[in-house]
Image 1 (tube, rainbow over the protein chains, first blue to last red):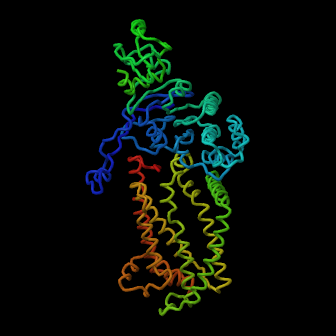
Image 2: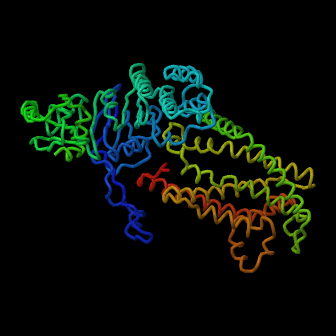
Image 3: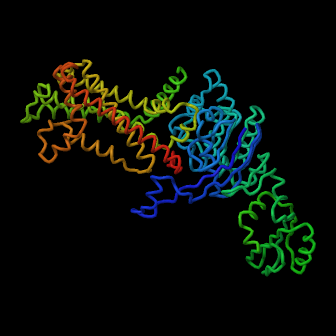
Length: 330
Length: 265
């Protein structure tokens, strides 16, 4: 369904000065491979699967979305969607694909501010060639599912940020694409709106067999929605089911211990431990192997423990450990 | 084909709704238009100029001036049609849709073109009714206007290629065209009234020749065969610019796709 094969993008270096002849040469000639945005991204996504592309800011998520939408030429490799090259055969890909760009990009200005939600959705349905007989039916269905029915005739500009994002998802429900790319679909949203959007995504997969690529840095969202996750930061790091990722960490930690202890504690436990002291209370976070837990707790017992939690590693912990946050844990 | 037409109509309806949603802007627009028509008419009626207007096929400065105004606005309709759209905010989502880029381009500009033509028709009718403007409309006039229209589109193609590749906020070509067309092309005054040092720029300005032919055909009633040699020159220039514009545009889009600036706001 979707296959990334050695997908790589290097951006040419920016101009350093007004008369930067080297950069000028890059601009007119073939750009030097200098600033990596994606390096050898490889993955396959099956039909009806929700695949999470998880990475920190600057990992290359938007670069991936631009390549998927034919807006950016990869330096090498290709992205196949339904068997078509996403850039070279873009219009063939586009008829079965929809991308929800959210956050600051505001769906790149396609929604008209002084137009009702209904008219905006109708316009998008037309662009994606939804038949006239289906348009109204699908708009009603989408607005109903996302609790936007009462806002149907309201101007887009009068909606809150959360409602606007619901409208973006509604457009996906109207188009009912075979492939849906969601670029951080719930960023900045409250729990209720997030939950409504998550339900709509599940509905799309269940009812229409849509294949979803979710690019996000929201770990809980990736964990909740994705069948599989690819952790990447320019290059791929780990791929698997969300619950498996933590177990497949290179460092192979099993447990996370979070403790609050009285006093300013010196972090000399001999494990990967992070200590934060404030107002004579220290918060200790330790990433441990199963066999090390008892030894760590023994070392901790000499302090007055205010609270103690021993947890399984989550995707968020994996994320923190992988993306160099582990440096602070030392 | 029918689907594509329906999409253009949808673009048109959306843009029309948005335009009329700014009610006070529409009212102000019509007030401004009324003042503009009055001022232009009074100005053109009062001015007398020491140049042989008859050689342009026009009987008075009023006719010279008003034909220039109408033709200038007609041929400049495509200005910015592509160069503004391709660097606009909505471009990436429109590009990502399965609708062809030609349909999108026509759709994006549909309202602007239709509205501008309606307003121009209104202005022309007012000139004819209230300022006794005489206009001849023959195949020569239509071909001159069409050639000018395509030429300005070709220049906009060039400009769009330049803008999309460099992400320049400035548009030197359109800026140059705009300024020089007002000053040296003979839009308001015959070019020979210009100082000697502006004459060379006037002579290389394509709008000068478009306006000359338009005045001869629309004002003087010259036929296609009478302006034929100049029209051939204009057509060759237009075709050459269309080719250059197309090559620049293709290069610009390819460069933007390499740099990641296509649709980058």
